[in-house]
Length: 261
Image (cartoon, rainbow, N blue to C red; front, side, top):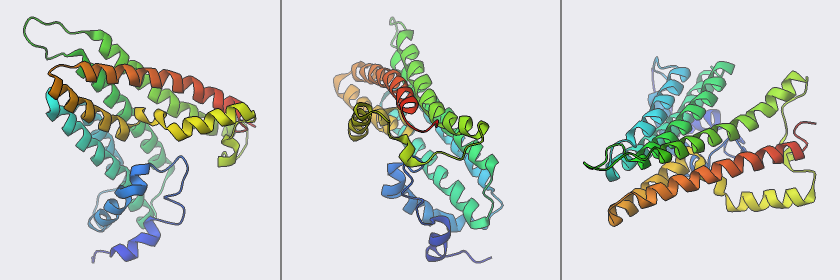
């Protein structure tokens, strides 16, 4: 069977609005990955690989990114960052292949969400274990406090996603339709201003998979120059703090908005 061209694929796999979704499209997807995935699609749409199998591969890539951080030095951070890019690519192509074949499903959406939970949590836990220095020099000891902080960051990242997803669960169980974007604005003018400030700073994004992998790579370079794990441990502490604060602020933002009305 002849491979479809990029021009044939684009209007089907990138329908109007797919890149403009407020919470459903990552900035890296809009910036470059959707164009890369579009050029991978011709090699996938006529194969026996199902969209759900691509989602499974996405999860494997994301979890392996966390495991790769156990490799000491710059190599582990670089492998982790590359695996997260593969994870993002697969996150794009699974939906695109599904749209081309007309095989979109609730199961696929569910697997995709579970995949994001697992992958981002694995990366942050891996970052914490990396900071704990499990492959320490002879005579040194493993400091498990950093692994604990990495786990705190991972738990926060999961809870932030769960808070968002549970809005639709609560609305569905109450017989309401899915929430609209404008309902996310807090009813209080003060909270609305704070939400805009947080959105402008975008510090909360650092606990996301792509952003965290780039931060991990950056601190690995700085550690290589310094000769210890100071910047890795600082990074773990910062991400744990951001995750805790953002979990609380996101919950307040939801309760203060019209999303549950």
